[in-house]
Length: 589
Image (cartoon, rainbow, N blue to C red):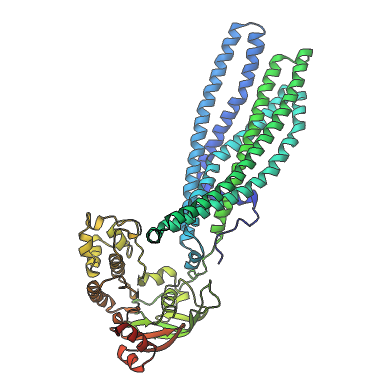
């Protein structure tokens, strides 16, 4: 699976915006209201030159005060309609943009969070946050204002062009001759702007990923006194983003300057011709005034289109990056017709000649011909040196990955035939690295079972020997634990994880170094809690400290992805193999 990347890909131009339509379509009433008010405001604007012509011809030239009064009353009425329609149009399009942004972000997050573990191993969280944040904001700016400006400019351009033809066909014909000269630079510069916009978004994502990485590892940064080094790295990333943005801004500025110069130059030439016609008596001054205003409207509309075209190209680049995320597909999914697990689930496990290598390390097998049967209710400990494949066994049970060869069954049912929610709902995990969320202590324990009552949460905490330190917090179970549990010690975080597993009350229990962060006194208490938790459940225990696995029904020794021995603590010591060697290293001072 490939991670999101690539400023190197060729942009797909406006086609990249097509996936945006499903997020806009549900809000068609707002879009319809915007179009109605856009029509009203444009019609009111296009009426203004007619009123000005009336003032010139019937008021100034014929010195008729009554005509002037009526013309100005009409002018104010048009301005009032314009004001109300513009405000309503702004409300509709801005709310449409916000709703579209909310729907897009929600769908993108829901899609990304459902991708499998392999995707996250190859992706940077900071870049994903950039796509959820800055990229979607660029798209929202297009929907919430850019589209409005573009369509308003287009309507005004077409309307002004039509009125210019109606006012003076000859002058309008001269204007039409210069339009191709204006459109050519828009097309040429526009594609370059999109490529630069895509590159700019990529550089911003790189900076966000770097900041996310170092801020999440702040203690390590401080411990190694790398504040100055990391500051320079971030400053360099920002400088690269700024340089990319400067190129994009410069290209947009050139586009705007060229278009305005060409268009206003052409309009000036046409108006010069009109002024000579007025002097020759072939054209009325009121007609020329009306034509001038329509020409100004048309020129302003072209300038608006050239400005917003850069926003369109930038949004297309952002949507292309978002589309890459939507195009990602999980390699591990629920089957179309999932098998039904036996009820009650007994918890019998069988690994049948399993072979597996991680996608990022295809030449380094993590498990080789791994064959193991675990009886319902049995506690099996997996031991061995680092890299032996212990954690891989748990990852395969959770179906973070699927084995390349062999199969794994639960009560005789192949794991690949079980719906993922059903499989993972039958498993309670106590990982080595506990994930603590920025919520209350109760919320973090309830992560194990969302519908659990407060009494259930307290009972689980008591069983995990976590009640004492939680109760001592300023707000007890309502106390905020801080992002990533910064207000807790390592041992306290691990007790929260054990409380989650207790609360989950699942038939399969996976313990990955569940007591590694505990001191000797706390570990003794937790071991009692774990013994109660393991009762009646199938349990797999991973531990480097062999003292914690002696109570297991069976100890399985792994080395190089293979099972090299299994038995009880006493029998493995007697064999004088790898287990005995590990035991001597730990137990002999």
